[in-house]
Each structure stands twice: as structure tokens, then as C-alpha cells.
Image (cartoon, rainbow, N blue to C red; front, side, top):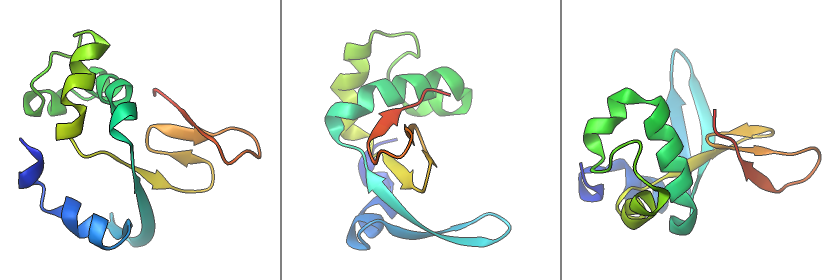
Length: 103
């Protein structure tokens, strides 16, 4: 699967990251795009924990980080803005700095 097939990505960018999530209820969220240079480690951790995603990514889950960094620009990646925990990142203490979490 390549980025052009993900039609929601240009829509999300055009909406400045504002979106509605529907999962039994509707929730307004803001998604922030992760910079390409930060996607490699997140993608590697995700593939190690999400077997269903592996067929869609042309890198083996156990490949070196450099392989993930090489394809990072092809895979749009966003994190959900919220008060404490976000997708792949968390806020430490009262700081606004986001640090990666590999769960």
C-alpha cells in the first residue's frame, strides 16, 4: 500500500489535523503529522507489535532501523493530540515535550 491510496491523508492535512473518530461514539480530535525523520523508530516498533500491518510494509519487522528510515517518507504517520498519552508518544510531567513510547 502506498501513500496515494490513503485518501484520508490529504483530507486530514487540509483540515489542519482536525478529525472525527467514530468508535461507538464520536470524538473530536486533532492529529499532528510526525516528521519524516522521526517515523523510522515508530514504524519499527509498530510492526513488531501489529502483525496485521506487516503485509502492507515492504520491510521485515526485524530489519535494522535504517531500512525503516529509508521508507519513512512513503508512510504518512500522525499522532493524536491529547493531554497525556498520544499514539506512540507521551508527555512527561508538566512538560509539553513529547517523548516516544513503545508500547
